[in-house]
Length: 249
Image (cartoon, rainbow, N blue to C red; front, side, top):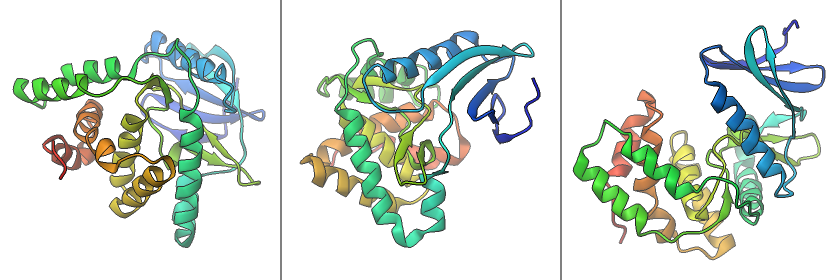
């Protein structure tokens, strides 16, 4: 199979447009279990009734595992926010509305978010044992919920079609858990690009849902520590600054 129309190329996976479908191709060293887990997670999100680009098949191409899903023509929300900065507030509101819709769904077969975060913190080697203890204690003290959480909800993972409809992709990190934990993670991802937009996003979410902003902020040190597991040098300074913040007045 000839794959010519490459949409994005990474170290371990690349995305292609192939016959009106999207094909995500993983390099040979990428674990088979993780490919199958991503497909399974996405299928479980489909089972919630949420309208997302559906998985069509899991296959192999030249010895590499690949996932094929439905193609949605459009631009990412991130691209639109860059192209039309005057419309950022409108885009952020649509983004929040979609996240609220996502969090209204449930699937008891998804992994628990708190369990995943605990594993991520335990595996860190860039913080000391005392910090790990404090973070895990704080995590265990947070309420347990079972709402659908995307796990990587940001403008780059939202496609806007020609009619203005939003389509959320990349559900590999989906889990069931506390909505405010997922909101805190989105806040951090936005803040890595624009603190101003991150603050607007958080205000919008809290106003629309009646959530106390301090409650979301309590999750920030926890999700920042979990994000450190990705070991991205460009993120470390900001993430460490959040890991050290425990109380909001």
